Length: 279
Ligand code: AMP
Image (cartoon, rainbow, N blue to C red; front, side):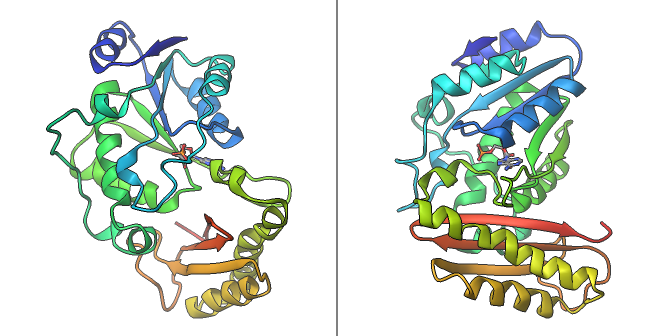
């Protein structure tokens, strides 16, 4: 596995690789969720590359950029063991050199949900992913359904800016009790870790209603809210039953629905989602 720090080195190494290339962008603190993306890429592509970059532009003021877990040695060992060919570890100055002033801004689908709670977030995500796609020129790029809105936003960007990459969406990897695996789970105290299962239980409550034939989206949002109220450590930021493409809140569910929620457990903000029904 080759470790690369600069765009120039990345370009020259990449130019020597012929055949399909799979990219897995990450912020490091790698876990089994990330590993599932790498494993899928390894199966599908001749060469695979990961990036590790904790992107300051996608963290708001007062968010956890400073304390975001950084476990580089572990990350490199994991990527190597999974057969990664190259790993790109740029510094903040490499991504945003002095004088930097170019941003990629996707409009409508960034407005609701995460966009409402974290106004600058997606502009940071789309900008860095656009830079990575330009530099890696991958045939496929792998993302997790865990960040459902991110996938919708990136698909829109890829279409709108004519990137010739196929976005591959991989299922959310969960702990045995249903909690979606996340680097931020490391912040949870033991009692909070127990309480955090409420996100998955709320989604299951709504899905159960859908599976029972309920097509009134408000009833699904209410099912999530009432489950969340049972957990005193949980503070809901939003619950949503939205159109999977536009992300607009639904009244009546005709085809599929994206059930999603953001919840504070103590100081930690967690998100999760289920994509339900025909897409
Ligand atoms: P991050 O390092 O948090 O930016 O995540 C890098 C990629 O891994 C993103 O595409 C995430 O959606 C994906 N990811 C994170 N957690 C999971 C998970 N539990 N299951 C599947 N994919 C995940």
